[in-house]
Image 1 (tube, rainbow, N blue to C red):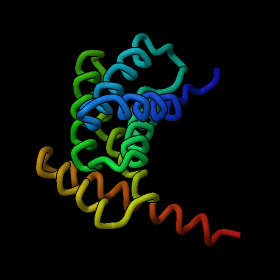
Image 2 (cartoon, one colour):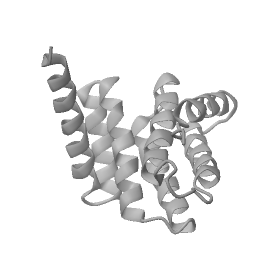
Image 3 (cartoon, rainbow, N blue to C red):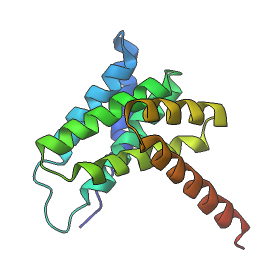
Image 4 (cartoon, rainbow, N blue to C red):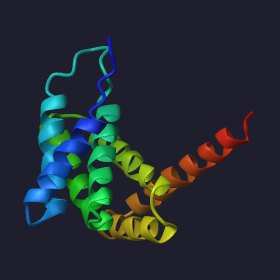
Amino acid sequence: MDELRIGQLTKEMVAEELRQLADPCATAASVVRKTLSIALNGVPAGGTPPERVIEDAVQGAMTALLLADMSLARGAVLVIEAVHDVASERQIDTMESLRAALRGLADLRRFVTQQRVDEVRHEIETRYMGAGEVFQDYVDADARAEAQSTRTP
């Protein structure tokens, strides 16, 4: 079975919504909520794991916010809330869902300054005690993996 990848679709949907609405971060979170509600509705056994779907949707939404030059810190918190809500509604492990969202958020580090990563981490930590540290762990792991892959001939 083909792996479900919704990052590009989510990015395009969020980007279009951002152009039309007054609160882009809330719109991004709303699109993530809608997208995940549909994508996670009755995921077949052997299909794309819910965590991968969540990570991909979060990456797409945050990339759209980045391209629109919106507040990544505010967007991150609202997207995490959306993921939490959908995970609860769909009876998916909320802790694993939140970890998947944080992994998706960590992908931002490839495109932004360390200062912006720190702003995102701080906002996450302010709202979700301990989650900022987990986010930073994912950021660091991604950076190490990227560094390792560039060294390997």
